[in-house]
Image (spheres, rainbow, N blue to C red):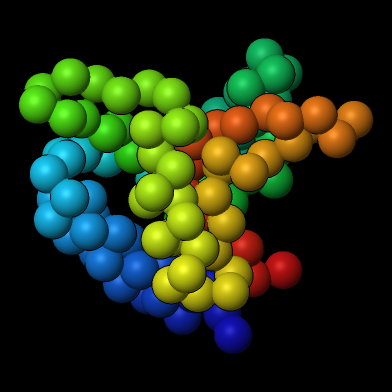
Length: 117
């Protein structure tokens, strides 16, 4: 399938996730959904991302989660939604499960992606 088709599935799953967030009494705003290759290079050089980020392909988003207008910036705050996200499609991955190259936990809980590769 082409990235465009994956982007359509990703968008539908994202809509379901956002509805679930609101149904559970939370709110959210969209963070970075698209990233230029140049910005991915900059982030990678700073240790804040990777050069082949799925954001470049529009298959990842960072969501800002709120409860009663308080910004929730921990991976644990996103856990319920991360588990729901993974249940929507076998290609969906949640950043709260991420590890570094040494296998150590490196959670990025507000990151939601679809990895078709």
